[in-house]
Length: 255
Image (cartoon, rainbow, N blue to C red; front, side):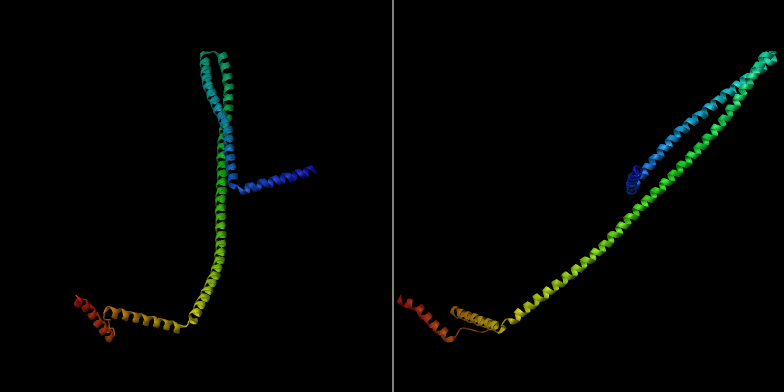
């Protein structure tokens, strides 16, 4: 039972981690890049140790080669001088060193070959890993572009729907305004038609006649001839003239 509960908990956390990885692919890719750098560094460290071994074998082979040349010269010299015992000892030692030299040379060749194979394997592995990382990176970028395009398409579709709804609203508002305008124009026409225009015209005529009469009285009083040959009545004017003359001469006679 505890094992089953443990499996459920493990599955829950794995699903949670999977969701987090799916939501952040770039972060996961950066982790993989860092892992590749660490693995490459670790491999290079081991490769450096192997390269040190190769150099050590190479140095040992060089030293054995020098010893072999030296012993060969000494053995020949002692043999020519008649020192057979010394020459024999040197010859035996030369044979042992020659065997060691062959062994070291073989180890050096194998180590050098292995070193080159490791270098080649490292380069191939790193190149393949980088290619995969680059491919995944391009896939992530393409995924982001596709997501952005899908979001833009969804926004455009939503905008079209929204604008269409606003157009319907504007159409209804336009119909309402036109209806109210028509009603107002009808009311204005009814009000205008209900007015008695004859009374209005009569009132305007009376006002005009009264204005003309007032103007004639003013002109007669001031002795101004109206335009169009109209003037004040003659009898009224004569009487006024006589009265004016009498009024003017009266004070002179008195004086």
